[in-house]
Length: 267
Image (tube, rainbow, N blue to C red):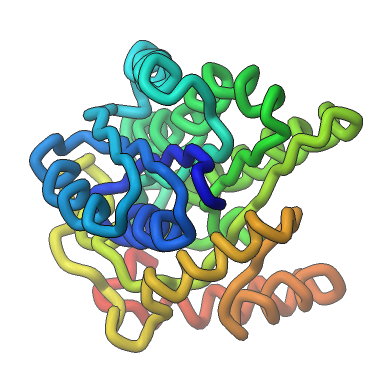
């Protein structure tokens, strides 16, 4: 990764921040994108101490113009894009029957369209450099999670888009990685949208018992270096994906039982 140029969206916290630091430790230069300029600047100071160049670009990935500007500023400064990590994402938690459809739309705009917009404006440079497009997805992209119809929909859509992109460019040496952590400690559940679009506020899960973002980031960097197609993390995550291939109805029941135990479950 020495002197490669890596763009990380959603870089202000969680997996995004951890990925930025992990890539920097391998010698990559970074472009950090997120909505909060203040948080990006704080992280930039930390990463700069690792001896790499860092550019911060405040970006709302749900806005196509922002994503285009992100890539233009990257190319103006560095002249290339080697790796794009589509990490920016939001979640939601509500029964679909109670859900304001604008919540589902907002989740799709960030998680799916954000990935599409960023990839579209980065793809030509990435192809020239035979680089990597990474989608930080979820087990929810393999198995629908009750209470998270919008979130699962966005991740299933991301999977379809990136898989089609990989196959479309089989003869152009484009590397596409679908990275699917299991439940990972982050603020995504705190900021998850409720049925009316307001922030959930508190996580319904024990964050301390989850995989830490630094572990996820190290695995993603290794997968990019090895040019893996898929990365599925945690024992439960791997089991869910594997068993769902052969016993989908049984896994339906297991998932329902597991998710219904959450604090203030909507079902």
